[in-house]
Image (cartoon, rainbow, N blue to C red; front, side):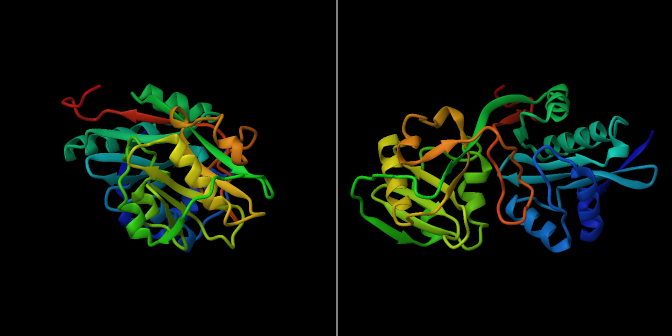
Length: 297
């Protein structure tokens, strides 16, 4: 079977949304159907660039897509899927090879992505094409009424721009895209706080659960990070909080539960827009594929 690669900017948003809905129907992470408006929002929040993103056609019809987020010299595969009839035909491999080749032509040093661990087909596919696991990512949730018992701290509300300018010991891509300053800068209705040397960014407090979008400091002291987060949580008693995906290697499980945040592993996660909120609770893998022969493996 022959395939054709089509730039995403040549495909109307309504057609893109239709293909996404077909491709993600029954998805392990859950899915709420998109329309052009909600797809545009998804693309915005994922930092995807229509200029670099591609669709693949089989037998003259759209069969799947790969949305690319390019930040500096790092390409992130922000979303990729095939409609059911195109699976197992080679369309996905054709598209991924094309995306990797374009990344190499641009001089990008790596392509990264996140994949749900329970999505065994996707895990096998990406490993087959040279991706390797670099971290496990988790979400954390605090139920309403959970005690935080924070130490007294001065909490100062600041602007989002000021918050993302605060020094951080970890930067993207070491820091997952979802909680990086790049993603936070694209958020809507976010609120930012500074607690001594720590920056904390949360979602709209009137929407439950309140999402913790960012938490960082220059020295990466877990005592400072946990104390600052507890102080911010204490400003919203009785609220449910959800901590977005984070590097498992940087989590102190003995610390976060002390103020009510617990890792959840019994529900799926997804970056797909949902009604209400995203249920990102299931562990997933951050994977990388080096695209430049000069990059350190």
